Length: 111
Length: 114
Image 1 (cartoon, helix red, strand yellow):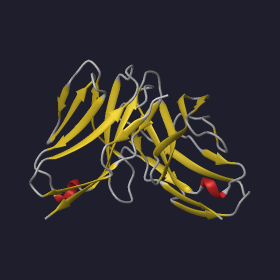
Image 2: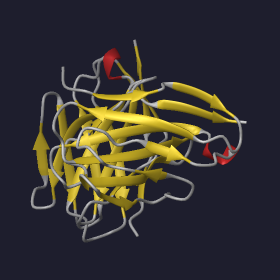
Image 3: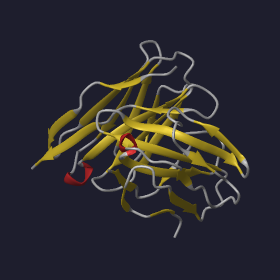
Image 4: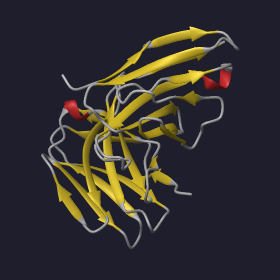
């Protein structure tokens, strides 16, 4: 089955710097990738997604990069703000309806 | 307001006492799913439903039941809860039957089984 791992359980950045959160997956047939943000005491909130026919997708202050060769996914947050402090999860589907999540990276923004 | 609601938000119960956690969405979504979240393990899918009367097992279905009699509701049933089911539970829904497509999550239900 699919396994998804995040590279760092915790990431600390200074306010205003860019943040990069990484995710690795195991199934080369995975075709859909998604990032969620989870603030303390709340449910996960959709941030951005990307399909396997793309390498990059941009949203508001966020960019997702997909490297299918090494099965690596990253989320970049520009000009990180205190409100970005949260746990970030990547999710991967290998076809059908099965979504597998990584364990999450806690992003801490230092003032 | 478009949302997924769960009840109760917090529940403490004893081993073996049947319980139901309700989930309801007001977005006319076809796809609904239950997850449990445990430290170090992330979100794991328990059951999902692609439409009314269509349900299927996720990664960790043992000890749980679900039903989908109406499109908006997807209750999670623990017939005989055990302490290893102590966890944080999330219900989610999405318009598409494809998992991951902008799933909307509920606020979570924290369950403690003693």
